[in-house]
Length: 487
Image 1 (cartoon, one colour):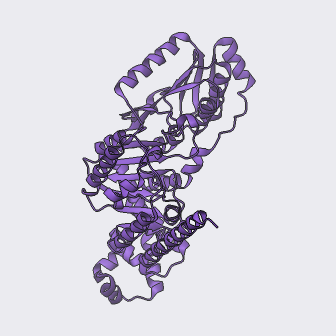
Image 2 (image 1 turned 135 degrees about the vertical axis):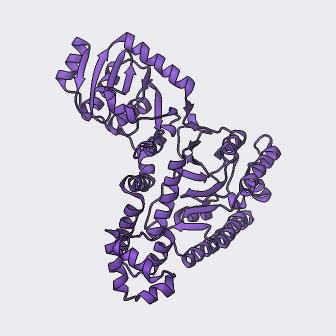
Image 3 (image 1 turned 30 degrees about the vertical axis):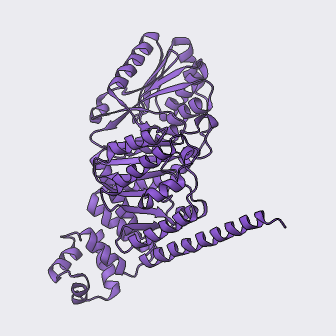
């Protein structure tokens, strides 16, 4: 239990009650309640003590886990752990190519083919049935409403729709108003590999607690085949029924009329500004991104330096960009969380991610250097944290902005098919107070687990990036001079 681990850690430091009272301003009575489990230390008090304790990384993590277990309870902590895992593995999820499953059992396939129906009694059989339906069907549109927690089924559908020939997908995705477990988080993170291929689910919110009483709340329908199933119990029935198939397609049409697309794909600065303005009626508070957000220097000089001159309406695009960023920056003094690796890549490449790549070029070295100076000024205000890439790997393909009641996730993709050029950005806006709080608590969790550079180390690192920019700039001028030398 937390209070036992906490008491042991305090005793190992050899602090007296008077020492603790003087250093952390905690009176003797409150100390006693912390030690016997009557009272849990407030988060800020716990963090101050934690940072003063001489603990190994493993011991610190154990103490943090025990504290968060007491503070949040098992379900809330599970959501934080899910975000931690997803932010570590998201790039892998987006780029992986699922492998085929073992064929559906001959007896089940024969029953479906000969009798037009077959019963299924495991997760493996459900996924195998979906694979079998794709193999039996002519190219066309599949309609389904499974949640992304159905990993095996989703892998099968993804492989056939994205890497198959001619299959399309209408995915009806329901977010739980009750926010049960990691359901909503999984729907967001697991959708991103689909969004990277321009497959956009249609969404709605509903209370899902009654699904446990429904025999088959999920379906998959393609080319007259209908799979009705329960995702948690792993039970279902596969039917060949044109009447039911038509009914499910009609259901999808009704769902779409009352639903909304999960993501938007801004094709230009106008669409980008419109989507961000929809969220920015709320106060923007923080940004979490492996590659640094450049908003702190996105003024007139910066925008003019990165918008490509050959883009039609250049002057208007500059004005639009300046208005867009100045409006956001005037709302609040935003917190930025980024990575050491991302900062280094910006120093080397000057790439701008916030604007669709077709409109921008690399930031000049002077603007890169100005950015690093600006971020150094934010460190003592606790408005910048740099993640240590050796301690925690943050997904590179998303940037998350936290507004008062909205989580806005922007996706960036490189090396996509030529047919999708100009569509390499997407934005998902989730209006969900509880989910918004989960992300905030996750940021606190990173801090408590000591995944960030210290203030001194962060400042020293940014100064080294300034030196790197100066060296690269000087090398570029020398190369240009040699190229112009007639000798």
